[in-house]
Image 1: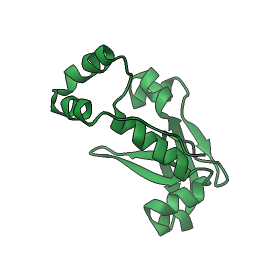
Image 2 (image 1 turned 30 degrees about the vertical axis):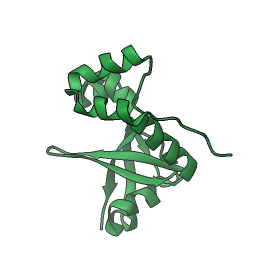
Image 3 (image 1 turned 135 degrees about the vertical axis):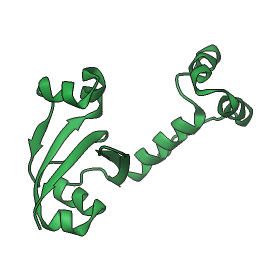
Length: 134
């Protein structure tokens, strides 16, 4: 039941040595859309039943790895037990909605943000601001 992935170490080395702006062109010349390392990470996450959600503040964005199917309240506990204990709501926007809007402010204006309760199942790529009171 495991997927077989073929990765060319020499190509991966060449990709990593390129400046970021040249990598996409190199990948397209090879006829692939993403590096082998990215494909391998995605396959491992899938096989292990893991997803990532993000939190974003003024000075940092952080990814949190959780099991797929975890409710928002339990996901909040991965950040800190106080956030899980005092959970009120999860202010959520999907990464794809944010990327389409172009900014957090634009995503808010377009109504892409949702308020979700403790039983909301966190999705891969959700950007979440947890509201809590301890």
